[in-house]
Image 1 (cartoon, one colour):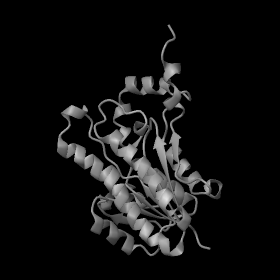
Image 2 (image 1 turned 180 degrees about the horizontal axis):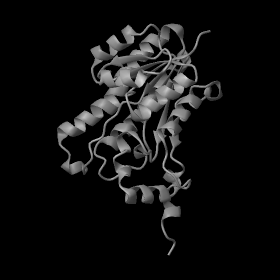
Image 3 (image 1 turned 90 degrees about the horizontal axis):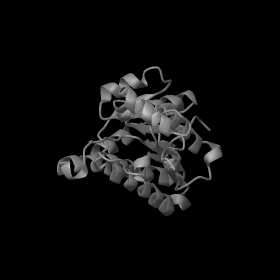
Image 4 (image 1 turned 120 degrees about the vertical axis):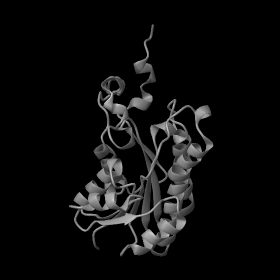
Amino acid sequence: MGARTALVTGAAAGIGAAIAGLLAARGYRVALLDRDGDAASKAAEGLEGALALAADVTNEADVARAFDSLPFVPDLVVNNAGIVRFGLLAEQSVDDFRQVIAVNLVGAYIVTREAVQRMLPRRDGHVISLTSINAYSPGPGAGAYPASKSGVLQLMRQFAMEYGDQGIRFNSIAPGFIDGGMSAPIYADPAVRAARSAGVPLKRLGTPEDIAEAVAFLDSPAGAYVNGHDLVVDGGVSHAVLKNLPRT
């Protein structure tokens, strides 16, 4: 049996690049897919055997062409591509709301659907999608992001129920306060960084590498019986409401 293969979307930077880099370091042959093909190529440099693909995850034909161009059917597909449009819900434009849903939820569906169709003949495969703690506790000013990530969580659960008996697993990972990717600008403010770090029981922000390690675990033999699960990787902050509020 050869090395495992993986396709990671939104892999040109941030969490996606960290996932691709860690998988490559663990012996996977990785394809980095991003709307920015040049950035994907740059991120792939130095990763042994890595491939770079340019595709828009909201475009069915783009995604199909990307899969067709691969010399393998991926053992693992990671839906990491995502966007956010900050602002109060009633102040969001409908176009902004639709765009976030299109990339985060519909894009994850298009990529997963394409992966499943190719994994079915061999009755083996694994899809991991990135959700968020916003799927459980919506953050004010996050626009359509919480709704989109809650949808992704249920999308993976439904796929898991429908195709588990075909040998394909589906899981998701809910990052907490991650110092990287689209959240990086938030933590450029020292006051925000300090306040959020203090609110996490582990007293630190998460890193893209923390999420990459969770991906590697779920796809390892140690995670082989995990299916339809959303793994929260947040240092415990989701359960810290009482800790962070005074008793008196």
